[in-house]
Image (cartoon, rainbow, N blue to C red; front, top):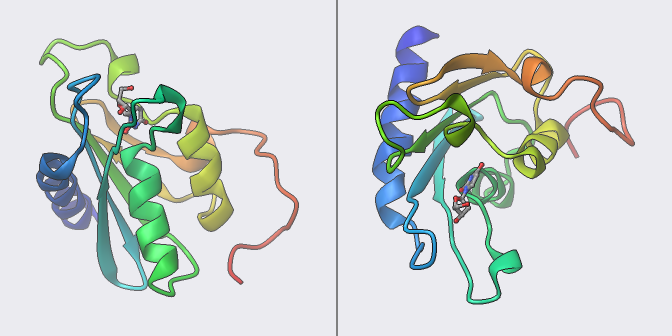
Length: 136
Ligand code: THU
């Protein structure tokens, strides 16, 4: 799994180059493993700031739109954060944690570049759910 997470992190860093972030200038890349395939995403901002979508969600939605039903791992890279950044500048936002919870399990690993690997359960305990299982 460690090799796989390293590969996912590499894909996330590469994906950050596709970010559209003229307002924050904060490039973020994400990669998810789903059905044995890697899907990537990056943040896409908007002049109406609230319409911005995060890297994690573009990657998750790419996997779901490709027909996958479950996310097995996610990696996130905030490549513009300074090397001595506080962990908070590197972590996935709350909205993306909730979106991930729709398709992943509490044990699902989340690799955060320069901050370590966590499970979804650690990052989002007591998750709101309308259904018990992931999948369609
Ligand atoms: N951003 C992400 O892509 N993922 C997160 O989890 C946190 C924030 C993006 C959104 C925005 O384009 C920029 O980072 C600054 O907030």
